[in-house]
Length: 291
Image 1: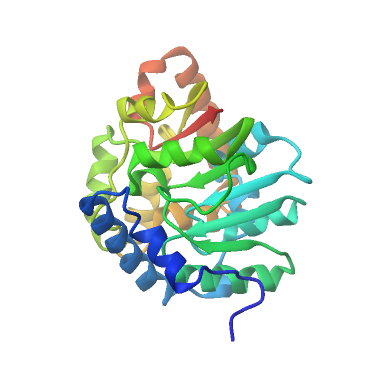
Image 2: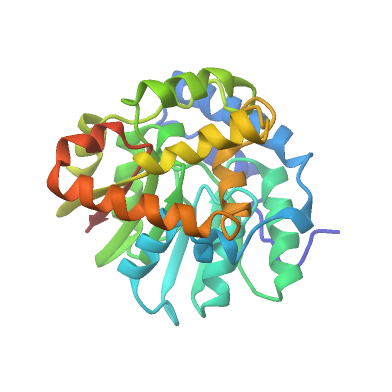
């Protein structure tokens, strides 16, 4: 029996979402690979290990907290969590009183997300869909949010769909990795087993191209000297990137590292304010666009 917290497409609708005729065969192939990869990840997820409140409240959740402050009070807002994964963000937004829809290409992840919503006693409307073929009416959402999504998808079709489903004046926020820091590049090579074949960090040029579909575009970078925490993970705690997802573990141990992280954050804020060229060495950026 289907979990009551999760509403998936019918078989024909699923096929339409992943095999939209407007998509090129190459994009359809990538969508299928992403679907298979993330369905495989879903089989190893421990529901009790999913971090819902921590994803936005941990001291190391700086990108999500920045986006949340920009969004303001979420009560009564209609929000789409694009590429929702296991549902932590969607559930958190629902806990804040938002009316939440969430989609992902991986049905197995959506099943996990539905169980998570049920565990927290919130209603989230989940759908199986690719970012380039969303099943929502025009002008549906006040906000669209995605964490680590754009670097998995076709930017042109995704931008078009996000613009379509946003209300006039609506905004979208995306947390995305940058490609410039050579140390992070080494990390990505070491972490190849926990990354999908087709994901690529996004350049500022690519992000500007994405932003050109909207009336406004801006971005804010994070994780400069704060990245030194990852050296501690590797050399002191012995966490190898091929076995431990640093992006998740740094949230999990956020309270443990609060004092040292906040010191690094103050250094990052100062350096990025007065030496903005250092943004190219940051790990992540938060993109904000408005319709």
